[in-house]
Length: 469
Image 1 (cartoon, rainbow, N blue to C red):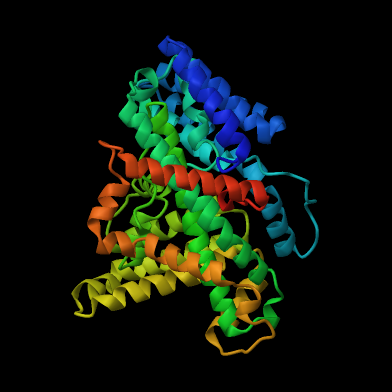
Image 2 (cartoon, rainbow, N blue to C red):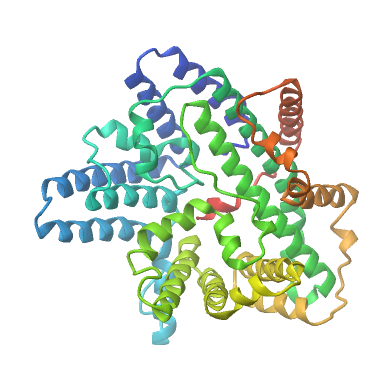
C-alpha cells in the first residue's frame, strides 16, 4: 500500500487515526498501531508478513539472550550469530541470484541455478532497524526490551516500514513506551504529510513518466541532448520521490506522537560530495556511520585506514541499494570522490575563491551518479555515458517527450529543491514551522491534497523508486 494511494489517504489513514484516538489506554494505542502496521504490510505482500514476524521474534530472543549473557565470552558469539541470521535472510532474498550469477561468471559455467525470488518490500529498512536494536543492547547503550509489543511496533511501524527513514531504536525507545500528542503536533503532521504528498504525486510522478519514456529507449538511438534531459529529469524525480515519501513518513509519525529524524536537508545545495552525503538520505548515512564506519575505526587510525573505511562503507551503501553491479559501482564511485576530498580535493574546495565552482562540481558528480544508479544493466550506463560525453544528434527530439506542463514543473522543482528556500530563509522557516498552522497553511494543504487526489483518480501511474530496496 503506497502512502500516495487513494486507499491509504482516504480509507486506511483516517480509520487508523480515528481508532487510535478513540482508544483511551496507552497500551491499547500501541496495539492499534501494531495491528494497523501488520495489516498495512500484508496488504501489499501477505506471504511475506511471516518473514517480518520471524524477524521480530528472532531479534526479540537475541536481545534477551545478549542481555542474559552480559559479561560472558559467549555474548560475542551470539551477536555474530544474530548478525549472520539477519544479514543471511536479507542476503538470500536480495542477493542470492546476484551472487549466483557472479559465481557462474567467474567459473565460466552455470554452477549455481537461479531461483524465482521476489524481494520482500522494505526488508532492507526493517532489517537495519532490527540490527540497530540488537547492537545497541550488545553495546549497553539501551536496556533490553522485554515487552514483545514494543519491539514489534518498532520494527513494523507502518510510517517508516517500507521506505524509512531508518529509525534507530535508541532514538525512539522512550516514545514507544510513553508519548503525548496535541492538536499542534497533529496539525504539523498533516502539514508535512500534505507537502510530501505534493512532492510525490504532483512533481515526482510527472518527472517519472518523462524519465521512464526517455531512458527506456534504445541508448544507441538517443542523442546527447535528450540523454542529458532524461538524466536531469530523473535527478529531480528521485529527490522529490524519496524526500516526498520521507516527509509523509515524518508527518505520519507526528500524527501519532513520534518524532522521526529529518532524512533530507536540501542535498542539491551542497558544495562538496561529502556535504551531499550529509544532506541526502541522512538516516542511512548515520546508520552506516554508527554501526559500520566507527566500528571499523572511523578516522581514528590514520589517513589511509580512514580512506579504506570510507571505501568499504560506500561499497556497502551501494550494495544495500540493490543486487547489481551498477549499484556496487555507484557506491564505489562515491567512495572514490569522498576519499579524494579527504586526501586533497576537500582542502582545495574550501580554500579557492570561486565558490560557485564547488556547487557545479558537486552537481556534475551527483548527476553522473544518478545516471549510474538508474541503469538496470551496465551496458545502459556505458551507452548513456558515451551519449553524455560525446556529441550525438540522435533520432528522438526532446519535445517528443516533454510538453509545457513538464517544463513548468521542472522549473518549480528546481526552485523548490533548495534554491528558493536558500534565497528566502523565511520561506524555509514557514515550511517547517510547527508552532502555528494558520489559514494560509490550511489552504495550501487543502489545495495540494485536492489536486493530488484528482491526479491519482485520473492516472494510475504512481511508481516509487525505493520499493526496489
